[in-house]
Image 1 (cartoon, rainbow, N blue to C red):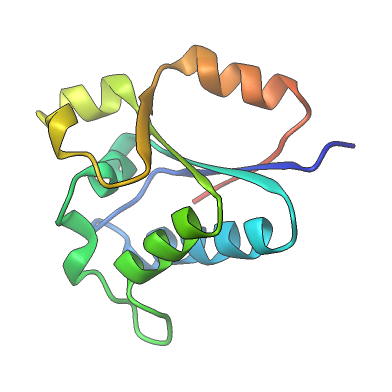
Image 2 (image 1 turned 60 degrees about the horizontal axis):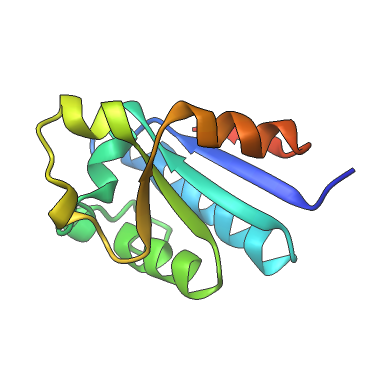
Length: 120
């Protein structure tokens, strides 16, 4: 078993509860020593754009932007689905700090190394 964990995040403002819980789980994983990647895809790709997460705050949780910043600061890896980002007309120069645009091959490579995964 490897110490790799992937959170596939397919939601953003369309389902703030899932988006928030996805980052809560990702923060727990990175804090426990797992090499942790959050893959922002489908609607979750919007979270890769600066300013988008600023107003998302699910009751009972820290604000989403804070959770995202904590994740990156703790050493988590933030990947944004290239076709998902482009499909939504988002600009690469507007990526949040710490994010990288990747294609499916990068995700497959990470998962093939034995990463556990969960989708929100």
